Length: 85
Image 1: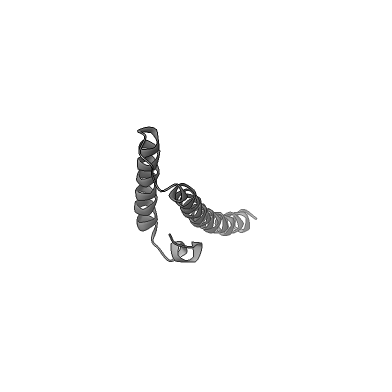
Image 2: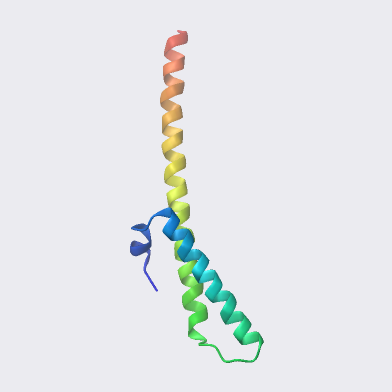
């Protein structure tokens, strides 16, 4: 279990790997519950919250990349307009 600050320090590749591992754990917990085994019930909410944290950090990264591209295109557009005048 990690907090959002720890996830923000990770690379995108590491975040994807961690997300994959958490989804596998979530799947295994559901299978244990379905087969009659008694899984650690508290792990369901912990895993669910960690998945949400990772997805939030990934969307923040995506938004930052998009804003960076938008700012670059704004500079390009303004340069084109100056050249046309």
